[in-house]
Image (cartoon, rainbow, N blue to C red; front, side):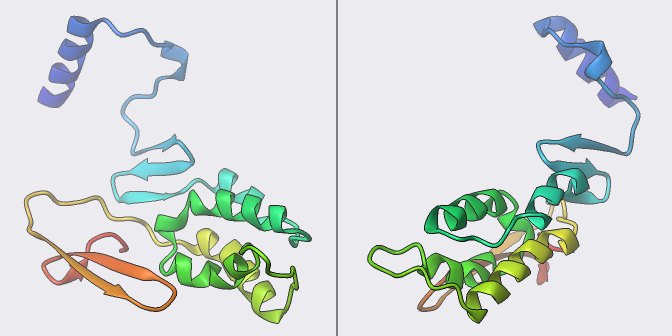
Length: 155
């Protein structure tokens, strides 16, 4: 209750404008910018993920770029996204012929599927110490944020 008093006091002080019909109070989760944010963490809004699932097979480089742009929005929910997208990214390079093969189809289907089964993202616990571990390979750079030896992003 103290937090609510502080919140409403701040609203009174700064006099923001808002539409009461668009406000929600006393709920366990809210949909915000393509994500469902709740007391247990953050996950993908199922309504937003439908466009990814229904995306047709790319026919030209522009299709790959559009698909990559759409799916990149959810990249933090997909472990190893850059590595998964690598076969598609190869076709977007200059002077590379557009040859859609089994490797690209497999990557395309995986990227379409992964966000629908994405893990819930954990909310950070700022009272614990963070540790960042990094690694690099020929095609990707990776990092993982840990708290007490556990991945603190993916639950």
